[in-house]
Image (cartoon, rainbow, N blue to C red; front, side, top):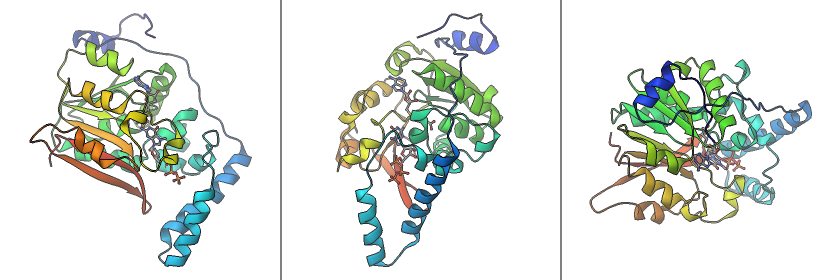
Length: 280
Ligand code: MGP
Ligand code: SAH
């Protein structure tokens, strides 16, 4: 999983911090045909209509129509239609792979989470499921006083995250790693002030469950939280909008509180974020 390379300044800094040094140099950009783009626009228009509608019967009709829509993880067209919501600088050459189309945190949500996390005045933020960079870019943009450590098990994603961070002008403020989350947690020996968790939820099919459980994730969402707690109690956990709230509460130790926030874009709840130990 880890490549052996000559040390540059950034790597030397990471070695000094006890962080593993690993990089990928290969790229796997995503391409979409013009036909797919046409499809997308139709679906996105649908979503906007539903959100704007305030008349009960209209809402119901739209909802029913939505329910009938099959969840097809291979069809990323609706996400392509929302590409500028994911990255406002999309046209500058943003790179995503298939999984990232449906997993990347929309920019406005990522910006909001980053600003909220800044209130606990962190010096070092770890994003161990960084994907192609939706959140790390916003963490780095939120303050030039923090150090962002970004890691993902997939080296292609880390390469794309680096590329995307460069488009936003923050590549030099982020340390990139390729590693498994649990291995990383065991190896890090520097102080982490805050961890942002956005693990995989099993693809868009997560919505097929009426109520989503942390144990449906791979890796298991309970294990992820407990491992993160070894490093810090300041944790922002990005979760599906159909998550069982009782499970989030069950993560608390006596006397602790959690703030659970709905992340709404265009009047539609996209995700939830649970903030543990992060007070305003
Ligand atoms: P979604 O429900 O697939 O999209 O994901 P949408 O547009 O709400 O679908 P619709 O059919 O209801 O209109 C909503 C958001 O959740 C995405 O923009 C991502 O930010 C986030 N997300 C989705 N998935 C499947 C994952 C995941 O596996 N991991 C993480 N971290 N985020 C995800
Ligand atoms: N927040 C990111 C998206 C994260 S999607 C963004 O906005 O861009 C979840 C990521 O977790 C995927 O990129 C996947 O490769 C990574 N992942 C899955 N299992 C992992 C593991 N065991 N350790 C580290 N990363 C993992």
